[in-house]
Amino acid sequence: MNPYRLALVATASAALAACAAPAPLSALALNAKANQAYFAGRYAEALEGFESARTSAKSTGDSQYEAIATFGMARANVQLCQFNAASNLFKDSIRLRSSLPDTQFAKATQNLVEYARFLLSVKRPQEALPLMERAIPDLEASGIATTDPIAYAEFYDDYAAALRGAGRDTSSAVTRAAKLRLDNPGKAASFKPTPFPSGCKVG
Image 1 (cartoon, rainbow, N blue to C red):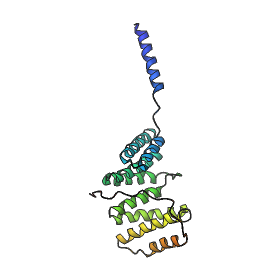
Image 2 (image 1 turned 180 degrees about the horizontal axis):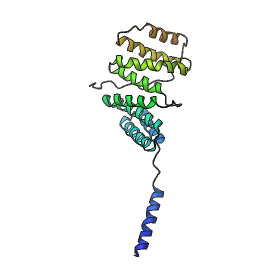
Image 3 (image 1 turned 90 degrees about the horizontal axis):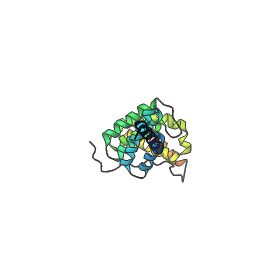
Image 4 (image 1 turned 90 degrees about the vertical axis):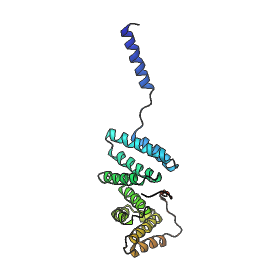
């Protein structure tokens, strides 16, 4: 075959292949798929998806989804009992989120509270306490005492546990949790965090 014609055929074939190939998923789409896997309990798949989302976000300079995907990686690592990796990723997610505005679905308080819950679960209340205290003003400002009072009461249960573990007085936290429940009889928490795994070896 004529070399020029061969080159033309090769170019056309490459163009057709490019048209046929699916466009790469965005960080948003990758993160959404990872969340679906996470909430279905497929944590290894979720971790891989969050890693892909973070890589995509970094490649496009999307700081919001870099922070969001890093938070997802931390949560997935907890469920896989990879506690050292989880702790480092939680710290990274808080650092990234602290330089960004909150969005409807991504707020600094989520990162702070989830990391604090994790630290409580591995018997590190003194590290959990400043994270919870840092989150309280923004939680108050968000109106959660009205929009999801029982979830907020459960947060204060955890806050009391952190205070107790740190050897500090728990009375104000216990009183706040009790009042939130008393003022909202018959209500249940709208938000229920994913339970942390039991039986992991803490190293």
